[in-house]
Length: 356
Image: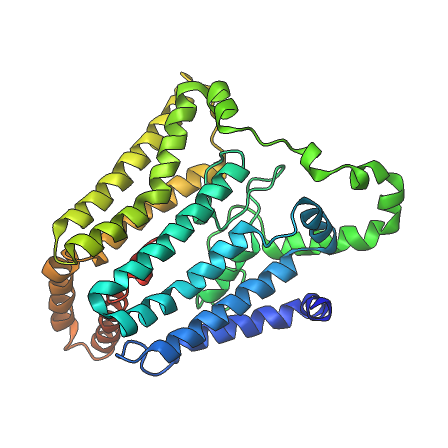
């Protein structure tokens, strides 16, 4: 395993390009939305998980590995969450093939419950900070805008032509890696000799995470609102899946209940943010990354257009009418037809439109 890690780090540019190509190639697998799609989904999940692991190896320098190993011998929770998200569509397809359309929600609910538990653990371990990218992006103590390997991997999945374009929080992953390698080669053993106490001191003593009682006592009422809003965000997918299992896809109740939980949770966080801007409360401070995360969560509300019963009764009809309208146009008609075909196929899978 150590030899594999060294090879990945020495050939990181080649690995990133190959992973990006492999992820883009999975879009062209045959029978993507056919009845027997376990094979294509399994391939896509495997490629995604390998990409995630490779990015984690690349973005974790030896010094960071030493720190992480000293802190915990387990795989980081954010990495576990990303790997589970890579696998969840295959879990859904297998559950549907084995148990049918109705009973598949049991296994999906188990998956969402595991994800909720992981996110709650990340939320607690981070000292009750807002989950960025649903917990997949780790917040560094001195740099809240740094990106995790999992977020970099998500960018590689998108067909942008290179793995470092897309939405950014102000830093380039390549620059971070370059600085890590430069610092490692520039100091080496001298850094250990000059600062032995930084190596010998246990990481647990460097940063003490507050307990929930301490956090609430320090932040007061705004802190309580913040924790409530985050918990609603974490458990919302599980609530939606459980209601879908009970009432079915044709019922409006799961759709409305999920939207209500989203709105209430986001309103709570937004009110807390506005109280910070108005100067009424300085107990709870939102970073730029957390403000961007609130905007990202609002953008996810667009996925409600893809969820039944709204999709079947409204969105699909609009898409088909648009297709008929532009069909006479040679190129535009062909592109619109393929795009709508993909959207309809994507809508058949909960994990594609879950936003979780």
